[in-house]
Amino acid sequence: MCAHKIRISFWYKMKVDIFNTENKYGIVYTDPPWQQTKGNKRKCRPNQEKELDYKTCSLEEIKEIHIQALKNVSEKHNVFMWTIDKYLHESEQMMKELGYELHARFIWDKQNGIAPAFTVRFSHEYLLWFYKKGCMLKTSQETRGKYTTVLREASTKHSKKPNCAYKMLEDMFPNVNKLELFAREHREDWDCWGNEV
Image (cartoon, rainbow, N blue to C red; front, top):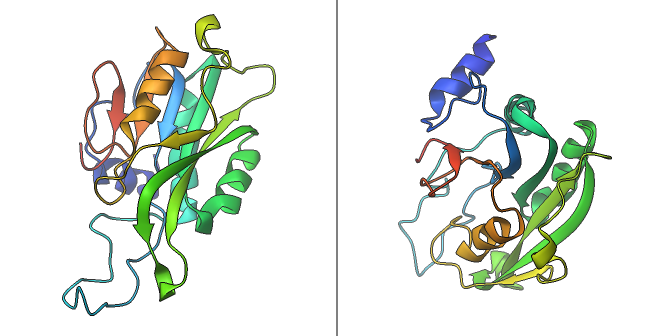
């Protein structure tokens, strides 16, 4: 393992070590810590720091982590990746380079959000569904056509993803091993890997 991979693997606490596991997953759910800041200081929060409350990764590091994690997938599998407008193109390009096709873009209507430069309020994020040709894991028969591409749930704290997304995936893909990358807490029946678990 190169020094860069060692740094990444030890940087993260984990319930499963993606660098050393025999586990195979049908669903990989990932929320990469894209490089960004909180923006400029505001009168209402003059003491707010510009840096986020968690460590971020470069695009190269995020890609390397996904290369490693995707060695642990079943033949039939899907990848669900969270991204924001700033990294929408990069997310799709990275997964294309890893051999994946885009199936759908879910939009999370957060019902609130930030207003950078005090113009419009950014109140959505994307959950991208990727698959490999011939290897898409199909949804359960009972859920086909049940869900729309819009997820509606108010955000609660910075970067915490909506519970409805987990429930949707659990409903669509029951009895499938699931791995969450960059997890913040452990969810029952999921394996997880992240520095805030």
